[in-house]
Image (cartoon, rainbow, N blue to C red; front, top):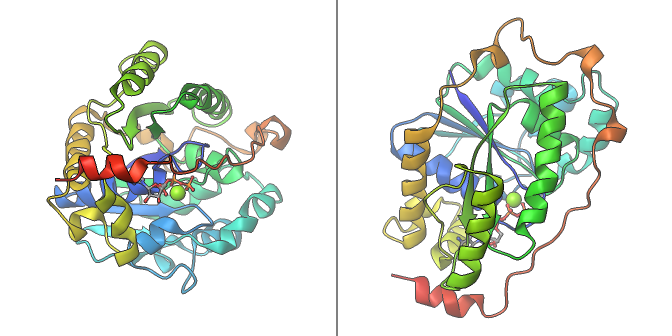
Length: 301
Ligand code: ATP
Ligand code: MG
């Protein structure tokens, strides 16, 4: 029985895809069977695993055309890691989902036939809180939030928490925050410490001890179609994601079986969240910080 975890943050460029891909590869390295669902029109997780996002069926076909998920899943080069590809067709998913019955539960329905087969199913979410992300949350036991150490990070987390509460009340009361992981951490210790303290205050016990350093190997690996572990297993970034996987395995709770029970008690037609209640944030792009490369060099082995 899989634990389904959405990798989510409506803020753009905070390391969701890098975390989803490298955590998935690291969990597979520890012998777990993993399905990574790329729920983003950018298809970055798909490319990062060496699959052409324009080639075959995508998550759009599962959600909108009821294609069986097994027809979309392909193997990645990493043993134990499988992928349900994303891609540009998902750009129209929010609109198309709005027309569907039980529009927030389409992804959960798609996952249902295979969820016994995996140890973890990770969902790489787009940078918005639209229906795709709502679908991911309604299909997940928990969410993992990559968070960049920035002054506005906490504001985004508070906004995300409100969406989580909506999903809890409409579809899935047992949805929990698995943890918050700091990404692209540099040696600017003061800011890191401030953000850490703020998160610890607002989300006690949720911050992963493992921090992901800014590491150039993590940003190079996708262009080779590989997780960092396969590209340079000794890089700081690869080791950090292995450590994160270990920490996750040690602290994660077993999945709530009710979410994927045959007669799932959570959600249904009468409970469908009104589209108007879903906040429609535009994705915020986070530019790479100036001078990051220099710090990157410092972080290298
Ligand atoms: P989006 O919101 O657009 O989907 P995202 O949250 O998925 O973005 P990523 O694509 O994972 O973010 O990362 C944004 C950029 O930062 C990418 O170019 C990625 O290679 C780079 N990056 C992510 N994490 C790190 C890291 N720890 N060290 C160096 N570069 C990183
Ligand atoms: Mg992404």
